[in-house]
Amino acid sequence: MKILMTADAVGGVWTYALELCRELGRCDVHVVLSVMGPPPSDAQRAQAERIPTVRLESAPYKLEWMRDPWCEVDAAGAWLQSLAERVDTDLVHLNGYTHAARPWRSPVLVVAHSCVCSWWRAVHGGAPPAEWDAYRRNVGAGLRAADHVVAPTRAFLEELQYWHAPMAPSSVIYNARTQRPFASARNTERESMIFTCGRMWDEAKNVGLLDEASRGLPWPAYVAGAATAPEGADSRTRSLHALGALAEPELARWLKRAAIYAHPARYEPFGLSVLEAALAGCALVLADLPSLRELWSGAALFAPAND
Image (cartoon, rainbow, N blue to C red; front, side):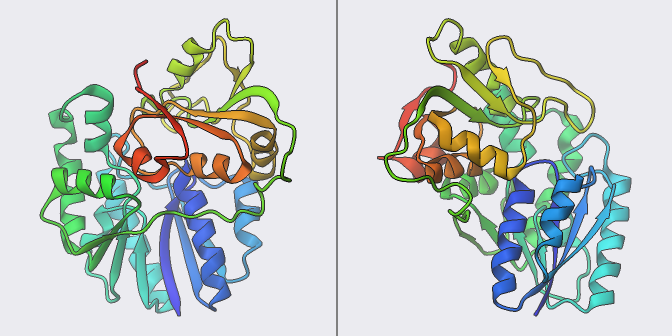
């Protein structure tokens, strides 16, 4: 079986896509992994090359959630269709929305990871301004045109339905991570430190709240994640020790050391970093969001995302 799968190299979609490609390869499923937006780093390319059933393709087209992307999104759609036809794919797996509305010859699965409209409400408390109307129209068209839609939590599926209904038939499939890189020995001595992970420039990650809360604490607090957005915005911390973006082995080493993993997000459709921290044995302190309650109730402490 051959699948055309889209991805980007900016955040959790890359991790999700590589994890899925690796497992599909065990079933002799071959994937053309088509990456748009900022190009994959050398480390990311090396990750993909280690999966023999993956062929990596990359083109620097803007992603649909970026500012004024539509000419490039359309060009990206033509590029994706040419790839699909060239390798005669059996399924198109889109980790985005808009391209589902194109005239594909194969069934189309859309997997939802985030949404500007729900992001905006969580971060700013209301609907996005008129400049995002085209985004909403195009995303809605893609969700209606798909053969099936998958969301990583029931809470996020309800957000998609609120903003973009009617939609194609849908289901919830939780994301997964291989335990091996993160598993630590039982009764490992933990260091007195707090750790978090996330794009520092993304307001939804709410890293600034932990930065403020960590002032004066007896334990040091660390953050791993990119400080500069794809379109140039930059972020800095005062109390948190910023480590920058970490490759998976280094991230796993930090998670195995930290006693507490804090996740103060205002918005979280799933939260792969929380799953990684749990696999590594960290105690979890999470923002009290419906999606995180759905996944981690009984296994974490929860606090308001503005406290």
